[in-house]
Amino acid sequence: MNRKNNRLFGLALLALMGTAAWAQTPPAVQKITILPSRLNARILLEAAVPLPALAAAYTAGETPQLLVEFGPAKWPEPPAVPADETPLVKDIKVMTKSNGRSELLLTLTGKVPFRVFSEGSRTIIELEKILRGTEDYLIAPDVQSLLGGADRPITDLPAVDIAARADRLIVSARRGQPAIANVFALGNPLRLIVDIFDCRYIGPTEKRPIGKFGVESVRVGQFMSAGPYTITRLVFDLRDPGLSACPADLPNSRCSSSLRRPPTPLPPPPPPRRRKKPRKRPPSRTASGRIPAPSSSNPSLSRRTIPRRLLPRRRSRPSPRRRRKKPPLLKPTSSSPGPSSTPSKNSRVN
Image 1: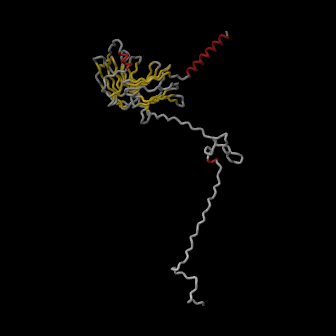
Image 2: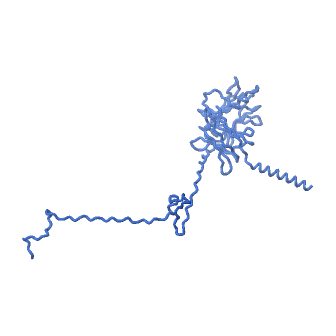
Image 3: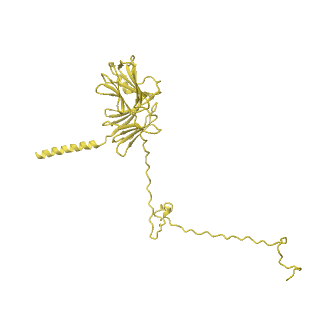
């Protein structure tokens, strides 16, 4: 009986140790995929479990770069950016910090609204392209697949709730069924559009001023009431691009859209450090204090590779002084007024 209990205890201990080891192992991202479309550009991170984003913001600098921080994870090699009709993503890099956390750096052609959410075990970073408003009405591919099914009932929307919390703005609408929403951005001025399909807004078109969280105002009204679709539209008048999460299908059949407070710009990532070349050790001196001359067995050792401070000092020989030639003495000529060396006849000796 004791042996059986010991075996059960040992199996339970091994199971707990295996569970602890599995919990400490960081998740591995199996694949990174970039899916561009006319409305947005998506970066899909496929793993066994979804990766929660700890922070996401644009870096401070002239180059538009979006930095998304995750927990410890194993990453594959980032893929090449595919060709796009209106390119938004220029480059993608994966970096690992000293504390074990990982960062995904996206270099873009411009700052756009974005959101980070999960679908099953996939983590999705969606970048909303800023449209000019002159194109036809565009629908995202995933939304188009949901609209291609059977006939769907149209529900009435009596009101929209707007609540401002400490760090975000939440706009929610109660529905009797899950919402199908098409999200995109328009420019001049910058607006984030959320179109809710199969929905009829009963109340009047209204505009509510916000003035914070990077949002100037929120507008609610009916966009399409007849035709192929029935659409209620939410318009967020933005000051600058930032993080948004819209929509989210909650268990209580609410369509919720939230915009967070714009975080302070993150500093740009440091450039990669260059590895220093190993410093060559100076050659050892002999007993006399001189450096041995390079031998044929070591031809790489020469005076150029030896530091100058270790070379023996050469005695400088004084340069021979040049003797200056004295200028020649000038001999007196006949025209010179100087005294003659021969005495004259008229001269007297006193």
